[in-house]
Image (cartoon, rainbow, N blue to C red; front, side, top):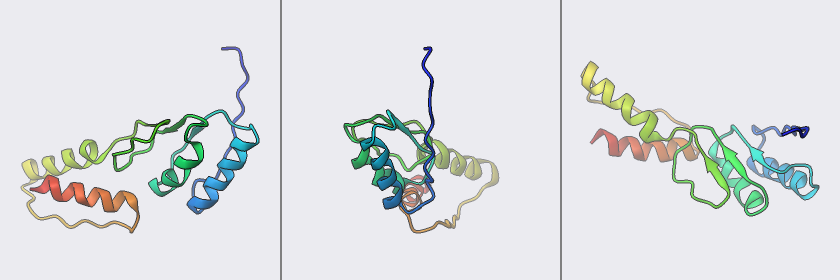
Length: 121
């Protein structure tokens, strides 16, 4: 549309509170008009109150689903789109009936495990 775009990069791998503080500083200073991030859900949870009602926030990363906060636009795959089809395929094509799930202790693995339990039944 004929306007120059500037990108501000924030390390989404930093502690969620640090990421949120940096994004808050950028928004407060008028340096960003929107936020987009490919990071873990704990960062999304820390950013949501910072961006809410101030700038649009696009989150295209795969995530556990259920995000409904205003102004946050999630378009990444959710467990029903990624885990359920894989479990179904392995059951139907490989005959697998027993599952062992490995995950770390944060939002995505905890929530996804609940979905896995639901799907395998």
